[in-house]
Image (tube, rainbow, N blue to C red; front, side, top):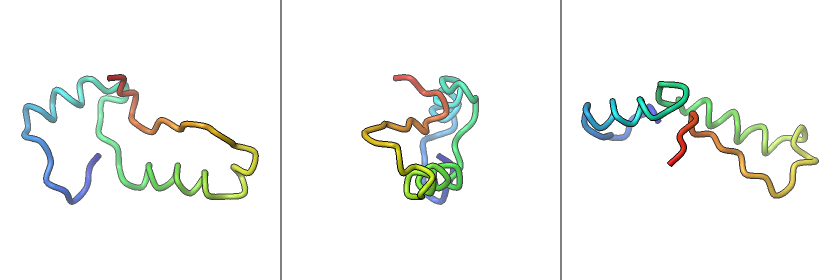
Length: 59
């Protein structure tokens, strides 16, 4: 995830990004949007779900 934290080195980051379906790191606002949805009345019928917000990363 892009942000203010110190991250991995450039080679590690390149390998990680290449393993993502979206071929890019996520942005904090994208995760915030998922949290906002799950916290909103729009998700009132959602129960016991796992929302994978990982850019297509499959470990």
